[in-house]
Structure formats: structure tokens, C-alpha cells
Image (tube, one colour):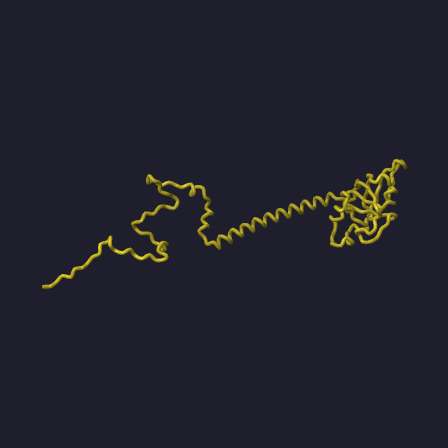
Length: 227
């Protein structure tokens, strides 16, 4: 009599659970099971079972899609954008400063301007000594110092002796009430006056007293560049 081999079948509820690997929690499969239901990315299911668009899909810009790119690629894109913005900003700022500097230079009493300027006249106290042009002067010399604004605007070298204004001649005129007429002197530019405004001049004592009384200290006069 043949014996029947009894096959022991393990109930499903007793079957051991499959071992989970290190990457089992990540779904690396590119295929979608047939019995799974796909929900479009642009929609979301509500509790009532209806499908509606979310606020994020409506308002978030499309460029957020780049977040799916690698960090290195995204960083490079952001860095390039920042550099472009900085370049545009620097170019605009540079053009603005250049325009402003040119405008200010045009308002200064430069030697190329043949007009007549009016400003305060003062004198060296104590004597002039060594000027920015590099040679010694006395209170008897026919000299003057021009404003630092004018001096610095035309400077072409770190050496003040090489300033293009050194040696330029200026004629100063002032009405002298004691004489009932104008008095004029011709002076040479030899120095830079820190306390002078753009059209002010600082003179040697002899030149100042040729136009006003020493006790006056500061007077108003007119002047122009000589060719």
C-alpha cells in the first residue's frame, strides 16, 4: 500500500517576513505596478475623494523645478546669476561716478576755462616756505596757492611737484576804494591750499597788501588764468 507524502503547507500568516535590505525603503524601480493608482503631480486628493489643484502648484514659479537638479549644478547657476547682477551693478555705479566726476570737473575753475572767477583772497600766515610744487618761497614773492579741490582734480602723479598747475599764471583784480579804482597783480601757482574753496586763492603777504589792507585778512577778488 503506497503511502501518501503529506506536504506541509505553511499558512500565509505564519510565513516569515522577507528580509529588508539596506536600500529596501527606497523604491528604485522605474515601473509602476498595474494595480497602483497614479495621482497626477499637479493634483491632490481631498478627503471627499475629489481632486483639486494645490496652492503650491498655482503660485510657485516654474524655475523651482531646477531644485531637482544636482546641488553642484544648482550652485553654479546661482553663482553665475549673482556674478551677473554684481557686474551690472558695478558697471552702472562706475558710469554714474564717472559722470559725476566729469560734471564736477567742469564746474571747477580749470586753466582751460577763459572765464573770470570770484572768490576769497587770503594771505600766508606765517610765510609760505616750501610749497607743494617743491621750491621755497617768501612773503615778497608774486605767488599764490590754489584750492585743494582744483589741485587734486588735475593731479597726474603722486608727486605734487609734477602737478600741471605748478607755474601757471593768474591775474587777480580787486576794486580798491582808497584808490577809487581797480588794483591788479599777476601771481604764479606754487602751492595747494587745504582751507580754500574752489575759487579761493591764498597769496603772499606782498601780493595781498597790493590789493587790500593787511588788517582785512580776507577780501573778495576776481581772477582769471593767463595764457
